[in-house]
Image 1 (cartoon, rainbow, N blue to C red):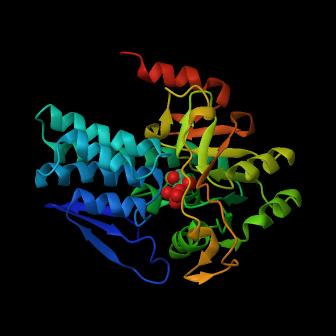
Image 2 (cartoon, rainbow, N blue to C red):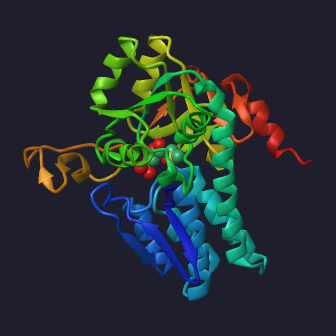
Length: 331
Ligand code: MRU
């Protein structure tokens, strides 16, 4: 059955608690903007498009509560995670409706539908790249959990498979929070898509031995020149793919593109708590006196990207600025 990461009905945002997967299926019912902000901060809801949609409904709950003016609700939600551009698009979409006196729930519903439709379009646009048998490597989770439905990186694989492609997916475990091992593997297992989870430091080996035909990842923010932020570890996969002549694709809806950033140098990179590195599942791994560092994302330069898979089609990095300018030009 298709996965849905979250849904909204009558003043309640229901979210699949991504911290509990794959062991337990837990649905949390969020009734306030504060609860939504907490869920985003703690990665209960995660993945750039999903947190954008959650934040849009967070604004709807703030409007119902009447506790915060729109600017304050936007600030609360916007302070949760700095890197994903989608978060701010979701917030600003509903804030504009609120300030214009329009129907805020209608605005959030339309935003959710747009994200889901764009992810499906990414699937159709990218599927032909995987039409023949392909061993594909992915990093983190860019499936339905991260995008409400369909996924970004997983959408072309889903559509290609439905069209008859024979695919095998290498799943990077994605330390420190193991989104690959826990979440991508869970999604692929549900759909009986052949896959194997590998330690993050094994990806270079499989890229070098010819066992990976293509890499596909999602993104949290893409600058005008094609530099992009994604889960920590993406950069090194892109460099090793390039070194071995393996195509490297980045799949994203329009809300992930940030044309106001000229390059990746100005993309804010979230740094999370040391505990996420020092512990796994509550067990301490490191000596108590050892410090850790925990950047949640890294920036991959555009020169390592073969193509972006967008809802409008496959775009080469050299064409991206022109495509984005055309989209923002008045029609
Ligand atoms: O910290 P997370 O789990 O929210 O990070 C998510 C990622 O880095 C995903 O790859 C990205 O959001 C793309 S989602 C389709």
